[in-house]
Image 1 (tube, rainbow, N blue to C red):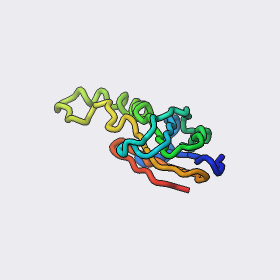
Image 2: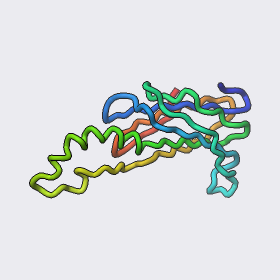
Image 3: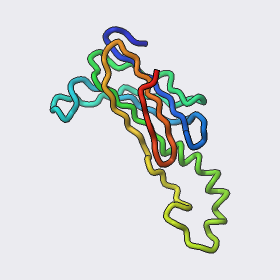
Image 4: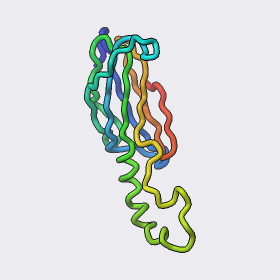
Length: 146
């Protein structure tokens, strides 16, 4: 809910590698007031709480930033999501990985290139900010939605 004295924030995640919403990704919301840190005026980040994406990839219950918020940060914990997605693949490929040729640097690895995604943006009172995350194992994109 948005008022004249505060901004509101929502998000959703689409896993573009699978063509479907990313369910179960933890999302934390932080806020601060003042100018950007590189101007020497930025306040400390205040953790406001978080949520997890639902079956539609949406966080419908993120906290409302307090009055005076000028910047918001969304932190997405994407590593657990991708590790969980990889488990069936690695169980199926385990025997193949032990065969003939040595593995290249990416095969058999259970690492995630971007373990987390942090998006920081400026806000003004009375506005709603919907910030979708388009996600795949080796990249991501965000934009201000509606």
